[in-house]
Length: 132
Image 1 (spheres, helix red, strand yellow):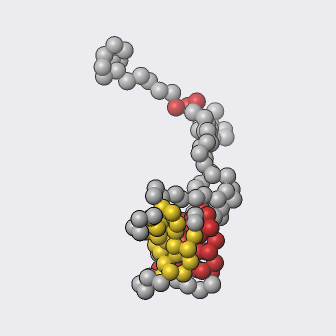
Image 2 (cartoon, helix red, strand yellow):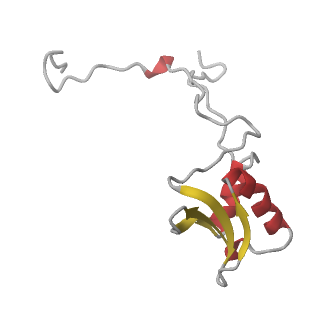
Image 3 (cartoon, one colour):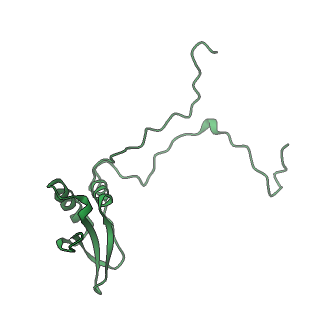
């Protein structure tokens, strides 16, 4: 039973057999670095957990990513690190901490994702040989 196109509940038929895959225009290129900007932040600091000792200070997160990766690769556990933003008025907050911080640093520094997405599948129907 088809509904009248003037009816408010009319749902048109959609043909999914001719769907084409388009790349994401906002996707980062391989090796492209990404900066995280927090509104009101004038700097960022790498802090040691739980002692709160400041290991390094940065003007942008682009400077922080390689230092975070080097710190972890030199033997420091990611669980003991926190990247904080620092405001002009003395306020601060956490950008990320722990193992998640390591993942952010690696991806935003241009490294490939650890678990890449599978390649897109073709939308074309496949017919088994000899079945036609």
